[in-house]
Image 1 (cartoon, rainbow, N blue to C red):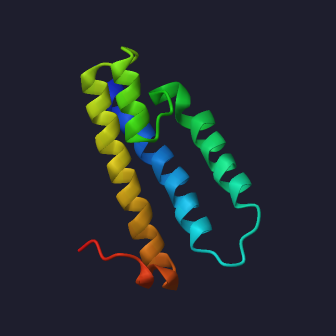
Image 2 (cartoon, rainbow, N blue to C red):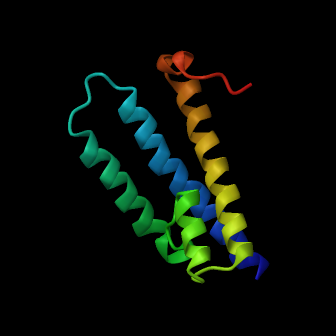
Length: 109
């Protein structure tokens, strides 16, 4: 069971990182076109690669709704939400450290 939870955590972390990293990059790009397509493709890629492992929630609200509808246990929901928060923070940190546009984002120190 622990191995399955660890895989679930890793899948949600990486999938959320890809999805939110794309959203952050697209939102902060002035010359970007067809943003909806880029965000949709990032979600499709994340779900395609990691959906079979974790269910592909990549959002705490989705994980909560899966728990409320008895699709996942409270333990899995907690692991997913923690992984999603970590993936989000990782995406923000990577964006801030790779681009100069990250200086304008909210400080999370």
